[in-house]
Image (cartoon, rainbow, N blue to C red):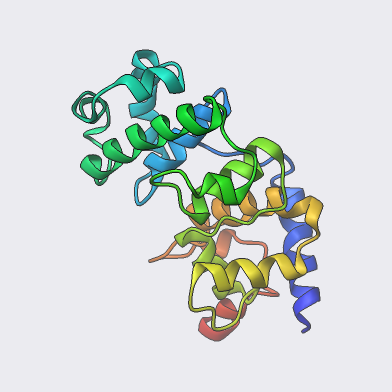
Length: 212
């Protein structure tokens, strides 16, 4: 089986199964999505969605967040993973957005990565979700699913996975494909016990063929 055939089969399956995939993080504007994605690092979307309503009610704008103290922000995010670091990053991120970008979230990966606490994955998510840019954010789900199915081979890092995926996914589908891979990993191709019986990709999945 060629790599292209495997990609084409997966993309067609997901397009049919999930025609309108979307982030499960709750947000209403770029500022809120950026904050939510920063909080979601090594934390579940469910937990982040429990935290952000009160946080955004207290700090509805970037300017308001920039003026808050780290201790004040911590009080709202204390139940997420690494709350001390994330509270500090949120304040520093907001301060830079205000001082350098006039409170507007940048629409490109390079500028987003100049913000404290914002790495390539977070920047890719924001660009893909808000501006539908062909950026592939790779989290643990996507890293695992891509390698299991055979969309990537011997990938050693998220960046390697990203490069192998975007090589075969049409640009216009990359924002959707990010969600397809992530949601497939979250609900079907789970880390410890993948639900192969519920998956429609058995015919092309490298892991399934090796382990059935």
